[in-house]
Length: 175
Image 1 (cartoon, rainbow, N blue to C red):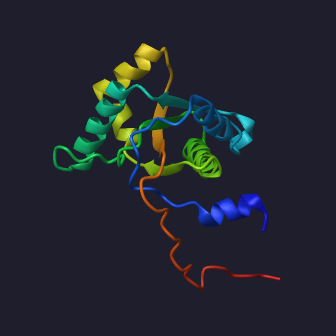
Image 2 (image 1 turned 45 degrees about the horizontal axis):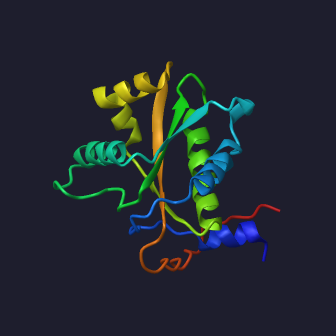
Image 3 (image 1 turned 180 degrees about the horizontal axis):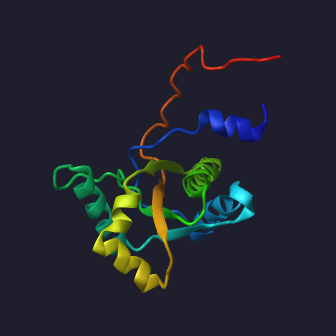
């Protein structure tokens, strides 16, 4: 079977990570894969913020937890030590699609490197908060950016889940 198709079939969302930080080289490869995602009109109008600083990671986790309405102490990133936050330029018609493809590429790349990943939502709400706006300001990011999502990455704690049986009746051929 083709390696890429195999990775697509085997990659699962991971909800348990070891605390060990992945190698920077691996994170760079994952981010690079995101940079090559398909995008509307070749605009490349997405950015990725790689968060490996534990203090900032924990601040993002806390913002996300509050937005999600979970009890104090819950980690909606399941302990993943690295967070790859994807934003897209709202001036582009395809910005949500473009950012989504970036995250998809990054999750496949993480899997291919033996790492686990999961897409975590609520990036839009985070970046609308004063704390999110301050982060962008600190990084010198100007413009009309919207948080699309987070690719949480790390070493898998436990077993990789098996894929659920695929539902039938979801493909229609017109020949």
